[in-house]
Length: 116
Length: 111
Image 1 (cartoon, chains in turn orange, blue):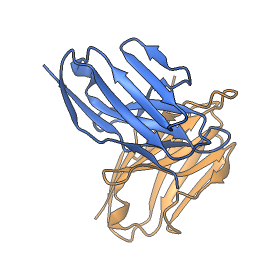
Image 2 (cartoon, rainbow over the protein chains, first blue to last red):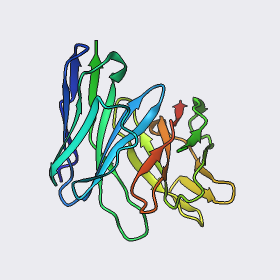
Image 3 (cartoon, one colour):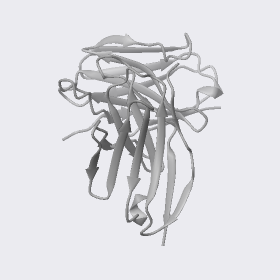
Image 4 (cartoon, each protein chain N blue to C red):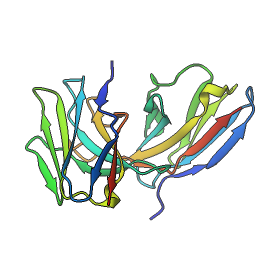
């Protein structure tokens, strides 16, 4: 089965440029998450969607960050303009909720972003 | 504030050793608890869920103490392949969907 697919895997960009990260969740999953991981802050939840609707974006660091999910099989995370402190690994993850047992989320391989 | 705290380690142990990791969480309303494993430069993957009564999966045992808001992971008979970062994970919303991760505890098992 195909897992969560992210692109690009690696990106190096200059400060001020727009960065768009893409994600295809596992088919049938109705939750999609964007996380950011750095050594200093660990894994941070940025935003998550349920059935394509943003539920909680309180983790989005500032207005330079935006995320969309136009349909069940695609989501983007955009940074405009990018800054060096945005350098991190950005993970997309998806899940489906099973009753009251919570959910297991499955991560993509991550997009490694370096802003110089 | 959403907080999941772990000792970052590293824990350096020989093969065959028993090692325990601890984790505390700040949201008393949390209902779902997990341990994830992350290998170097890889994505996190589910190791095991943590149930109120405690649960075991082979050499791994997880326990939950709701009163103290404390979770533990015990690894017996450590293998070289257990070397990784172990992430404590707690849900942060009533639906149990949004998961908050600790920064992880690094384990290095040597021969």
